[in-house]
Structure formats: structure tokens, C-alpha cells
Amino acid sequence: MLTDSEGSRVFNGLPIIVVDNPRRVAGGLSAWFYGEPMRDLFSVGITGTTGKTPTTTLLHQIWTLAGREAGLIGTVETRIGKDILASKHTTPESAELQALVASMKERHVTNLAMEVSSHAIALDRIRGAHFSIVGFTNLSQDHLDFHSTLEEYFSVKRSLFAFEYAGLALINIDDSHGMKLAQNLSIPYQSLSRKDVTADWNYVHAIRDKRGYEIAIRGTGGILINSFLPLLGSFNLDNALMAIAIACESGVDPLLLETIIPKLTGARGRLEEVFAGQNFGAYVDYAHTPDAVARVLEACAERKTGRVIGVLGCGGDRDSSKRPLMGRELLNGCDIAVFTSDNPRSENPNAILEAMTSGLSLAQPHAVIEDRRKAIAYAISQASPGDIVIVMGKGHESGQEIAGVIHEFDDRAVLAEEIANLK
Image 1 (cartoon, rainbow, N blue to C red):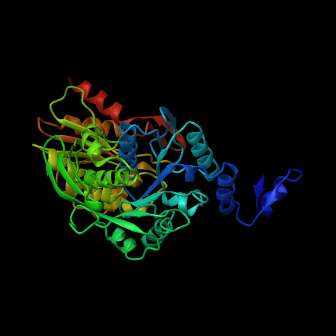
Image 2: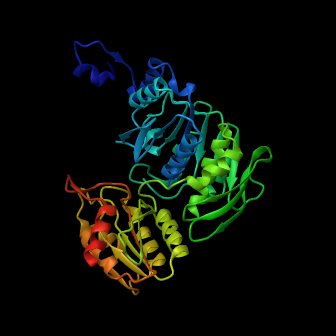
């Protein structure tokens, strides 16, 4: 039993090891106990405010399609070969993490794609972990209920990029914090950019059509990859570039990659289409930060031939300062904005809605509907051919937490049901 002095009194009579900070020690001890399994896999850790799940999902798909035995640890799910496990946290506790990776090693997994959250870094869940590559996607306001300032949030993310955890970093320098990170780094890194042709990995071109993007990627060592990326949204160009660059660094042949990329699919609950025979577009997305809301609505605007109708709520007992910012992005990016609830937890849903709309000029078409199902039903009742209805905030989640009780609620299922009710 590993504990601190206070815990030693609770576990009196049991064999214990007393240390000042059990969390800080547990990671390294767990890694030692399981034989440091991460060092035997090509392990990749991806961090950033958004893009972690799509990037790791794409990377896992690439490795699998390339014939590698691949593992995945993240927000939506954990995969060990063909087995799929539910995920409790984006990044597991240190002992669970090392046990998972040891299990992967026993089952001949050779490659691991893993999300690394700021909570996991701050709470020492990744102590003892070592990655072949760590990647940085972007940083914007989130989790300020846990990190007191944006700078502290960035500082925690930045601490992953050290020899303690990895020997190589891949960094999106289109993001201002990514550029800042690259300028003050102690480990070797490669830069990625959609805009800067001098970056180590960049797009020669990315030509959008209704199905996705015709792409040409230039990489290190003269690599040139020409293919078709069947994903919507310019943010998926960032996610794909990171995944493709890491795949190349892991030894996947660029020529093989050209045949794999057209087979890629998006992550569950990330700009995921819901089709129930309707004559308008319907999507769900996990967007729960101001920046993510703006990116998703921009992607919808690119695809629409009519209007964008957005549904959004803000979670309770979380960073409250982002609520009016998310509300503003909803108004700015939609033709019809529908404000609703999203996991209010212990808070009053109407108080959250008031915070979302506080200070906003609500001149354009909008609705404030606390009941999430009714909000979704209202949104689709307004839709005409060529419009897009986008329901944001919950993505892959299957429950709605209200006053400590989790009620069954899946945006994808509710959206499909309410579309069917229109007929």
C-alpha cells in the first residue's frame, strides 16, 4: 500500500510505504512493476485543448490499416487490438495506465495512440510514462475551473514536452501557443502547418469539395503524399496532418499512406452525421469550448447550401467564464441559434442559460429552450432543404447529468428520433 502520513493512520496494521506525495511516486513505481511497457511500444501522446480524440483516432486507424497491432487510449474509448473498453477518464490513473499498456504488450500490440489531458499531467497520472513522440494540437480557453489562468493551463501542457516523457515532439505552429512552445523546447521537434510552407510538415494544397479534401502533403526527408481526405472541416486538416506525420515517423510507407487516407473516418461524436432520410444535414459534435464551437460552425458553413441551425449548452460545475464566449460564438456562427442545457450537474440549468446569453445582442433568430430534447426538436422543425442542424456539446456521450443523476441521453439517437417524428 502506497500512502502519505495521513493515510498511514487509516491503513494501520497493513503493509504500507509512506511518502510525501503518493501520486508523484505511483507512476514510476507502476511503470517499474509492469516492466516499463511503454518503452516496448511505439507510444504516442497527443495533448491540446481540441483535436486529441480525432488525431489519435486517425492515427489508430492508419496503423490498423497498415497491418500494425494498435492500441488506443482516450476520451471516447480504449482499444486493445480488436477489444473495445469504456473509458472513465481521457487519461487513466497511472497504475491503470501501466496495466493497460502491459496488457497491450502481452497481446502483441506494437503501436499506441493516447490522449494526454492537462488534468492527467497536473495530477501525475503520466508519471513513469514514456512516449516515442508527443504531439501538440492547439490551446484555447478551457478548464479554468481547474487551472486558474490560461497561462497556468499552457504551462501544464508544456511540461509534457520534456525528456522525462519523450524524445521527439510534433507541434502545430499555426496555433500561437504551439509557436510559443516550439520556441522554448528542450527536446527535438518537427513543426506542422497548414499555412507555413517552411514547416517540416505542410500542405502543398488542400482543395475542398463536398466529400472532403484533395490533399498534397510535404514532409521531412522529401516525403510527398498525394491523396484524398474524406473528412469535413478545416480543423480536420490539422488533425490529419498530425496523424499522417506521426505515422510516417513510425515507419508507415508514404505510398501505402496514400491508399489508406481515403479510407479514414472521423471519431465518434466529432462532426458525426446523423441521417434518417431527411432533406437537410444533421450532425453532432463534442464542441464545448469557444474555439471548438467556432471551428465546428465554420465547417458547417462551408458545407451548407442553406442555413446553419445550431444547438448548444454549457456544462454545469465547470469553467463558467467560457459560457458567454460560447454563446457569442453560437450567435456569430448560426442563422438560428438555440440555447439549451448540457449536463447541468448541480447547477440550475436556467442560471447557466442566463450566463450564456448575458450581454449578447439577441436580435437574430434564436430560442432559449432548457429541455435539450425539446431544443433539438425545435431546431429540426426549423430546417429546410439545404440547411444544416448541428447539435454541440455532448458528442459521443450517452448520458445527461442533472442534480447528481445521469439520465440516458444520446444526441445522435435523439436527433434521429426527432427527425423521424417530423414525418
